[in-house]
Length: 627
Image (tube, rainbow, N blue to C red; front, side, top):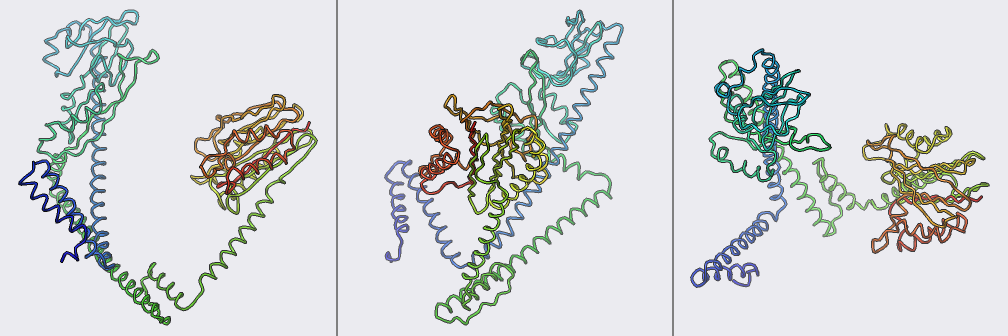
């Protein structure tokens, strides 16, 4: 018998014996440890046995999956509609609360001038009078106005602390000391009045009585985590017979007159806890007096139940049908595999499921019939590769020659795609005795889509460079011209320099691109140029954010523009080539022509990467001043 036991079964048996022994001979802690270990191990073993015995057949798995696919949507639909209902009702309740608060403030604001306009205002300076006519959270204070200064004449309640109260009119939420108020301060030439309500739980309960929600007050100066825990354990909510939904946050903004920032009162935000009283809402709905309304409501509910039930039945039928089709197809494929294994290549699978299983059966039939799909795929691959080679040759025609020389400059450039076609782009434009412009751009992504945007950019720049715009202005125009054609995930980074030959200066602008490296031959050192700028095509692109730097140049100076595919080359240790190595190569080889410096950079990149030059498109352009 033990021969058929697995090791886990023997372990459970031993654990069972040890658990019983520990109950009689060892302490309670050891017994509980053995007991919980036994329970967890036994449950895991039971789940394994159920999986092995019940779900070893694909048919059983698919039936279970079908039932799961029916029950899960129903569960999540119910949760979804429950949350949607709560969100709508909570938003509606918050709108009601906000309107009630606005009405309360409007009454205070309208009442304050009326009180100030009374000829014999001293009659109101009576504590007894205010105690009889106002709730406990009501506050009022009268002031004399002298030289824009408030001198208090009366306040109720007497303990009202007015420290920090400003002399200017205001209204809304505000804080004095550690208390939050809601009201306004109004004044005329001689007198002023402060009418406000203390924002506390009593004040919020006032709105609960006339609405379908409950509000819980939270002191703005109290730790929010502690306040949340107190609300969660509030006995009034926990022991309430009504069904209270999970909390929402009713946000408000208040002015703290006791804290200043830049010599102005600090404006802060806080929130009340907002709960929907669902029982109260349902009682109102069920208590509608109009019989016709009740009938219409019941009809609507019955209609929804009928539609929902129809969906359940339809889901069950569709799920059962799907399981039958799938299991039949799998059975035929399994049968065909056995026939093929026995050498019967005439067997064909006949499936009409109209899904991937039918495709699998047809592929099986093609294999059994000896159709060489690999050869077809190989020919298709060769065709695609030929098309990509043609696309690359067309793309290369859009780029200028890799080398260029004039009386003043010599240029060497490199463009190596990560795939067959690249999204990087370089270009230069020369007008004798006037200017030379050069740029490197990098389209986000790789492949055909990036190459398409690169071709668009080429056309726009070819047109705009004839206008003799500065680099920053030209980049901004590129954004305006191309922005409509960009999708949400596409953007282009650009670095552009324009050499003004008569002034022996160059202007450089950058749109989110890698910094440019400038080698100063007189000082024999490299520096990085990276004016501010955002990549074109991004939603936060702004002409005002485009900055431009102007630099004098002299003989043997070098300007090096490149894409991140060069500086981010990785070696086997996952270290990046980095800009420091590029600066070192340029400095050490600054005496060489631009073409030889280019080769030095490529050789170093290959040695550094050890296996490949770059996982990204690699583009750079070197300009060296000849005289």
